[in-house]
Every structure is written in structure tokens, then in C-alpha cells.
Length: 470
Image 1 (cartoon, one colour):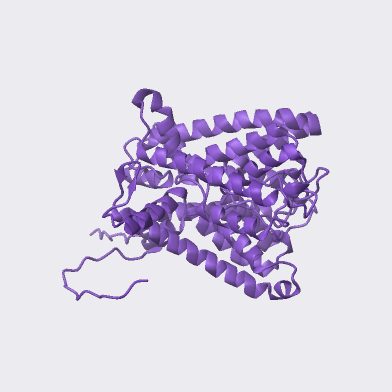
Image 2 (image 1 turned 30 degrees about the vertical axis):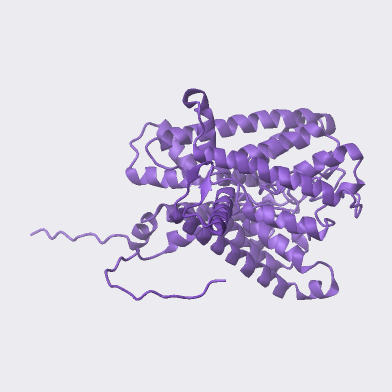
């Protein structure tokens, strides 16, 4: 007699596969784990000794979540092996592990399951999964093409500064980092010193404009790219693309004007905006406005920014760029939906309007939920940092606004710092790590993905709760 035993379902696997957001969240955790192990190797650090678990974990998280906050200068603190690991984490984190995996599945012409399509659609922020594999192919091809062009332009300039070998390497590294909105660079071994980013290149418009354009392109989002490519055939952009392009231009323009007006009299350091030659100041102000879109490069000193500029930077970092892009933040669409809804309520209109299109109230509800979750993460982060850095606050080494700047930079996956992340206590780094992770995965997707139970609909009638608002 043969006894057949029914196999029990693997509960952890079933729970993981139940929602696409869980798969994406787990994939980022996997990449961070592998990156941490590799960066802990003694041959990854320029000192020849392991940097330890915390530094390796922080760097791997920052690279995978395309943030750019560092506790060791990338050029001087890591060997070539360590730098290549960081670059690989940036590229994987920028595109998304699920996107890359699905792309290679499509190349091999293998049968793709419905579940894989749904996960890929969620990863690329696509509105559907019918043509998602075509979109993934476009994403990978366009990404590598743009990075290659950017690398050639940057290398052309850097070869004149550093020679062929270093110039090509630095240009390629920066192009990938800029397009992925990561903010990592390997310029710390130059005359400007460690963690100096692009402060020595305000006099080179090609370097700043190329880097800025790569940041903008990476922040538009995969769906917008696909729509732009189809424009000659369709002759009309979709509503989402028009919204993203318009708000991108508006936010960059507002940031440029405000930074230039506020900072042109600031001579607080050698690399403050007011200390630069007059002809360099407009470009530096424009680049500052662009880089706050979650890029992390800087051409002016962030530590000596006025409080007004630091607060403006915090707002722009919190907003971020477009959904489905390499950038972080709550996303410009979320911000715009909330503003449009508030205006419609003030006017007494039933539904908010944008570009003569009506927005559903459900869209506002989700936008408000994302805003609330993001705001909560930043508040918890800044309160934790302020508790840990009590002595530095009391001595005036930096202010509460600097810590708000740091916490928002981590959540927005930006990488700008007005205090210098290495100067913070290691315990503060421990609180910045989950902020970077949540900022990349997305607070709403992460929360939904961790939900163990499905929403239950009940027919039980409840009394209406009435309360005063405002």
C-alpha cells in the first residue's frame, strides 16, 4: 500500500509571494545583504582591514537604495574591488532587481507567469502588465544608452584633469551614479579632498550640466520614457507624463530662483555660492536645485547654507522626483495631488482638477496615506537623531535643522548632508539605515506588503462618527 502525504505549503514563501510589494522589498534586502558581506571583506577597504558590520551595512544600504550618504569616502576609503561592488549595488538598486531579472527572462524567451508580470509591473510603477516586458526592455536599453553617453561626456572632461585611465573610470562611475540618482563619486582623492563631490567643478559647465541632465532623466520615471518614445506615433503625451514633466520643470525653476536669491550673498566658506565668481553662481544655483531631487551630488558647501536654504532643500528632498524612477521621496505626483485637492476644497469643488482632468478621491486618499507614512518616518528619524546627538546640539556643533536635513536626506534617498554623516555617532547611522531602505522601497508599498491579512469587508452597519475638523 502506498501512502501519499500531502505536501504542506511553505508558509513563508506563500506569504512572500502573496503581494508584489513583498517580493520587491525582499529583493532589496537580499541585495543589501550580499553587498554588506562583500564590503566587509578586508580587501574591500583601502586600509586592508574589515570596516566592520555597521559601516559595510550602511554603505551597502546607501548604494542599493541609491542614496549617497557615506561614512567612508568612496575614493579613499575603498579599494577598486569595494568601489566596483558599490557601483554594482547602485546599478541594481537604480533599476530594481526584479526589473533586471524580468528583462533577462524576456531575452531568453522563457514563459513568464502572471505573477512575474504583476511583480514587474509593480516594480516599474506601470499602470498595467500587458506590455510590461516591452517596457522593461526599453528601460534597460535606454538606461545603459544614457549612461554610456553621459560617461563619454564626463570622461572627455575628466581625462584632461586626471589622465586617460582615471578619467575614464571616474567619468563612467559618475554617469551611472548620477543617472541612478545615487550621489556616490570617486573624486575624493583629488585636490578638493574626501567627500567634496563636485565643489571643484563649478567652473566646468560640461561636468555640471551633464551630471544634472543625467539626474533629471533618471528622475522622470520609466513610464514617462516609454510615453516620450511613443510620442511621434501617438502625437500626445499621457496625463501622467504631462504632470511629471510640468512639475519637474516648475520645482527646478522655483528652486533655482530661490537658491540664487538667498545664497548669492553667502560667503560663509570657500565653496559657498557667494564665494564663487559671478558667472558661476547661476549654474551652481541651478545644479543645487536639480540635485535636491534625490541625487546627492553638490557643487556648493551644504554646511554653510543659510537656514532658509537648508529648509528649502529639506522640502525638495522630501518631495523627490517621479514614481517608477531611480529617485526617492514621496514623489512629485503625490505632492501635486495633495495640493490640487486642497485647492479644490478651498474653492468648494467636488473633485480636484489637473490639466482639465478630474482626479478621483481615492487617488487623494492614497497620496495622503503616503505623505503621512513618509512624514512619520522622517519625524521618528529626526527625533532619534536629536536624542542621540544631544551633546553636539548643546555645544552648537550643529542644529536641529541639520538633523532634520540629514533624516530627510536619508528618507528621500538624496545623500546631501550639512553635518557630514561620518561625524555622527555610529548609533545615528543605525537609525538612518531603515530610513534609506523605506525611502527606496516606498512607505506605502512596504506597509501594504507587510500586511498579513487581506482587507475584510463587512456588511455590519456602523453609526456615523462626527467630529470637528480644523
